[in-house]
Amino acid sequence: MEKQFQNRGNAPLIYASFERPRVTALLGARRVGKSTLLKAYITNHPHLKWVVFNMDSREERLKIEQKGLKGMIEESALQRIGKGEKLWVAIDEAQKCPALFDQVKILYDTYKDADAIKMILTGSGHLNLHQLASESLAGRVELMHLREFNLKEMANLLTPNASIPLESIFDALLEPFHEKTLVEFSKDRLPFQKVLNDALDTHLVWGGLPEVLEEEGSDNKLRYLANYLQTYLENDVRAIETIFDLTLYQNLVKASAEQTGSLRDDQKLINALHCSRNTLVKYRGYLCATMQYLEIFPYIQSTVKRLIKSPKGYLINNGLISYLTGIQDLKILNSTGLLGHRFENWFLNELLTWTDRSVDNHTISFWRTNGGKEVDFVVSVGAHLLPIEVTYSSQLLPKKVRNLKDFMENEPKTSWGIYLYTGPFKIDKKEKILFLPAWAV
Image 1 (tube, one colour):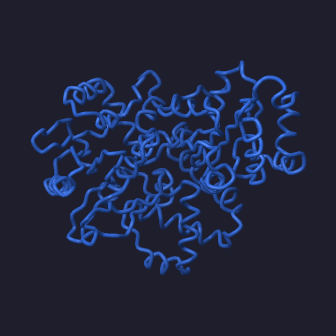
Image 2 (cartoon, one colour):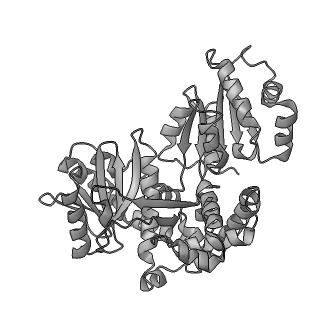
């Protein structure tokens, strides 16, 4: 029996791109649900004339090289492009067939004025699709992203009758500040507090890959993650011609899991992995390009000389971290002090999902001085600046609150600060700080 499609918060944004004339490239790490989302759109639009290819198939890749994309489309559609109905062409795992990118460009340029064809590409990494955007399809492509499940999506999956609204409270924070709006937002979600907190516990240990969440029991989840990592290495990484040492790459993935949320120390990594700096930079670049790892760089301001300049690194999926480190127990994570990094990692996914919606220029960074003052995330969206301190605690920790205030005093663009924790919702109007419980994000 086919699984029911789970609604995604950013689906309307992605579907809107499908309906605009330019080529849509939908990017995301493997198994986050790109194909499922695309299939749901196709199912809901049966009146459109669809042609679907999957470049995971060696046979279809060979056909692209032999017949050309235009020939394949016309053969499947049983019509010439531009001589009948508009054709909707979906190409899954497009990055596995670099030969098609120039052909997509030619087809787009040839038929764009006639609006005879719409092309949708999906890929489990930036690798060739970003190259496509900057070279073959510059100005012709819209890059869209799909992340692993965020907290609300996960809670709806795990508790199907919950129907939790998928809007983010951060949308309200970009508007002129209205205390009533924020209070009402929190109250509207109060009935879901327990299921959201339960989902958070799951996210901290297992991450948000849909198929992991559907596995019953820890052993099955670990087995899935082991297979996921092996398939990633064998299918995605081995296909990269300049990766010569798969064992070294796997060791880098493990080291990245162990150091998630920490300041990056390249020399320490070079010594541990026994590799050159150039190799480390190259391999880590591919880890980023396949959307498994993210670097967050320091926030730059006028006092840049007083700031730490090294980035922080995150292996984005908490489930992979659990598998690679062997720690899948919240109590052990808490006692070892590692739970804070998992909490940061979860929240980073929430921020990415939210900023993916923005058409404004946006960045996610962090602030840390040589004197030890730190704010975990600084989010810039257009003219707005949101400093966010993240702590897995139900208490207000004076040092962290003070760091937030210090940043706000030094940065005039900041109107409000956010203290994300596991305690109650409240607003300090005098200090302009919103104390936000994790479940209300």
